[in-house]
Length: 220
Image (tube, rainbow, N blue to C red; front, side, top):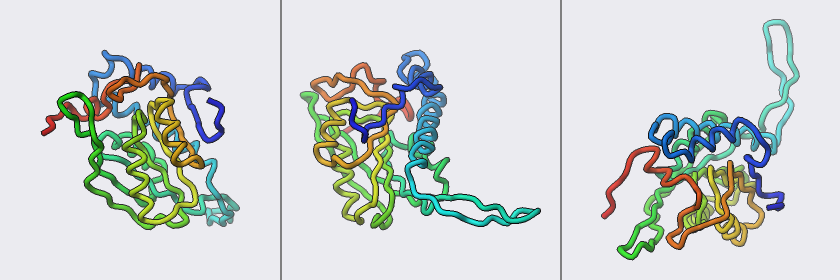
């Protein structure tokens, strides 16, 4: 992919590649703490990269020996995530943007007996987004359906100046779907896979990020 709005972190070798390999590895996945921490660290790295794109201003800082002329962010971004799988990635970004206001969306796949699913969205809480930088963290971008639904809902709370979508693993089909809807948004993906199953799972992917982070769930 050569779209300048798509940032594929693993394309340029770094320690992030090690973390991605561990996230995908079925043996290492058994360690939930390590799994969550690897996603959290990816969130920290991408938050740092996003910070380079944001506006800064000059400030004077009083030190014990004088005045330092420094630069700092004009304003912290709003960070949003989708329950529950998004929490580790969200936490990594919040570790960096530690003064950010935050938004939360409860959305999930409601599976049917035939394996198909609907996206159920039940809860949103969000600060004013007008003129803000919005970052939405969701570990897996598969079909893009839940992410698009979440973004549509968030924009009821205002029009951001810039939007960054942060994911651990994305599928090219999901990226295309999001960019058809929102072509001006930045997508930051630790890695990108090309295959999506008929049931909407990324291949090779890493499995269910929510279950691997927090345990399997019953659904009624």
